[in-house]
Amino acid sequence: MHTYISVIKWQNSSNTKFDALALDKRIEIITSACADLNNQITSNNIPLDKEIKGIITAPEYFLSRSNSSLSITRDTMLQYRQNLANTSRKYKDIVLIPGTMAYTKTINLSEEKGINRFKKMLSRMNEEQNPYILDPNKTNPLRNIHDGRLQQTEIDRYKKYWREQIIQGNSVEIYSNSLFIYYNGEIWKHRKSSGFYENQNNKDVVLSIDRKSENGLVNISDRLFGLEICFEHAMGVLKEKHNSLPLDFQIIVSDYVEGNRNNIHLSADGLLIGTPISITDKTTNITTIHDGIWSEDSNKNLNKIAPVKVEEWYDIFQVKTPAKKQGTMKKVTKESLQSAVIK
Image (cartoon, rainbow, N blue to C red; front, top):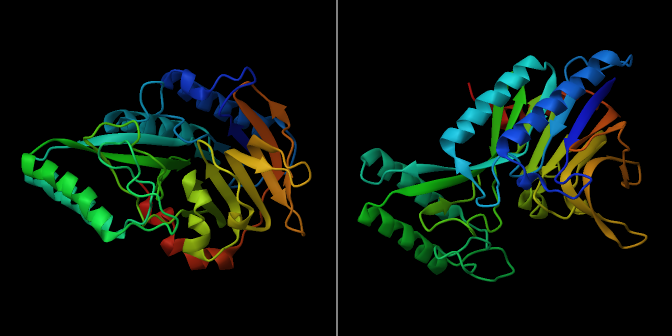
C-alpha cells in the first residue's frame, strides 16, 4: 500500500521564508496542499492505504510567527484551529500536521481563577531542567551549564519574579507552542516540552514553562507517529521518554534543528519527515538544510526520497505505507496523544 505525503517548505525556490507571508496566505498554502494531495490520491491508479492516504506537514511557527512577533493570541489560534478542522473533515483520510502555533493567553490576576491557574504554572517549575529558559529580563540564560539542570536557587529566583506579579495583581500571559494534528475532523494536541529561548522576544508579562508531561506519541490506524518540535529532537525527548520505541512516522517540525542520528528511531519500514532539519553528509561533511522524507536501510543509513511533484511552497512524495503494528500499538495507546483529543 502507498501514501502520498506533502511537505510544506520553510522557504520557497526564491529563498522567501514563510514568515514573510501573511498568516491568511499560509492558510491558503495548507488548503492548496490538501487539494493537490487529494487530487493525487483520487487520480492516480496505485494501491493506497485505506486509512492513511495522505500526510501533510509544515514547519514550526508556520501559523504564528511574523516579522513582529513569534506568537498569536489564543482567540486567533482557536479561529485557525477550527478552520483547519473543517479542512480536515473535507479531505478525508489525510493526517494534517500544519506546523505549530505559538500563542498566548491572558491571565487576570485580580480574579481567583486566574491566580489559581498561574500558581499551577509556577508549580511546574519544580520539574524544570532546561538551561535555556531566560531570565524575566529576557537578556541572558539563567545559567550557562552543561549538565542540563538548573540549581534550585536559580529556579527560586525565577519563581520569585513571577510570584511578585501575583502580589502586584498584574495581568500576565501564558505562552504555549503547540502542534495540532488533524485527522477526519479529530484534533490532537502536542505542546513543546523543551523550549529554546522561547521568551527571547516576548514581553516581561509572558511566562513560558516546558511541559514535561507531554508524551509525543499518537496512534492513527495502528501506525505510531512520534512528534518532535525542534529542540525536542536535539534533546532526544522521544528517545528518553519511550526507550527508543520504533516509530512508523517520526515527524520533526522545526525552525532549525540538526538531525541527530542517535535520536532517530524508525521501525523497519518507518519514515522520517523533517520540516526542516539539517543533515550532514558523512562523505563530504557538508551540512544542508532539508525539507523532506527519509527511509532507513538495513545498515541504518538514511536515504532521502525524491518528490513526485514540486510546487513553490510544498513538495509531494509517494511512499510505501508502514505496515500496521497492532502489538506495538497496544503498549502505547493509553499513553499516547489519544488522551489529548480535543472534542
